[in-house]
Image 1 (spheres, rainbow, N blue to C red):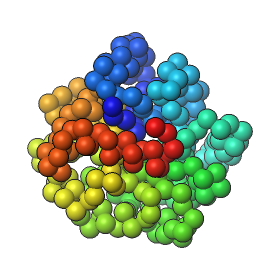
Image 2 (cartoon, helix red, strand yellow):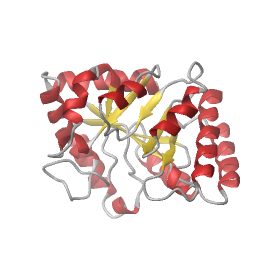
Image 3 (cartoon, helix red, strand yellow):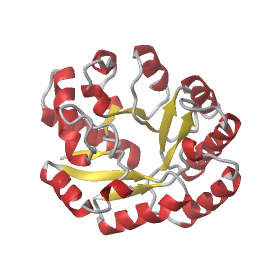
Image 4 (cartoon, rainbow, N blue to C red):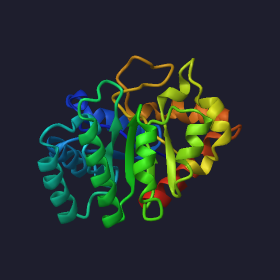
Length: 257
């Protein structure tokens, strides 16, 4: 059994065949999926999906950096109220920093990220962190709270050995490894030689980032098996061992098993 720690199962891309998508995932051994919120509207959609598939889909709540706009303070206030009034969320996420396309809301992203890091400390819920072209800024903020953080996932990690070491200096954090691992020009297989298996979790980020040999298609949780196969090759071990250890890592961080 394997766990997809990051899928946007509530997305419009799955609206027409979500039952079949979940059935295919279960058929290949996916026992659980974690579903992040990205904005206020998605709270309703992730809650719906997680109620539709109890003990399979688990919700996270956070404001995605690309959704940080002029009204972010009002949005965060509403989100925090929902988070504190409900105990069904297993993490604060998907939050983070993204300066890949634009730095228009750089200041707002930095403030929003730090605010949500504080939610994690307050609630003791782990973090699901998205970071693109902003590792220095992210690490600087996290460093202020290093001894207080409950842990979490650096989602969609694609960096080098030095970047991995910097992120893993934060206790009880792991790297989320997905489809990029299988890409022909990816440096991840080399990078992971310096990363213990105890410090990674599996993810798809579906419907995005489908792995080889399905690259270019709509990604879904059943495709996670291709990432497991590649990881077994990278770590020179069995697919069963990849599944067992990554499940233990999920249990350690999120408290679900």
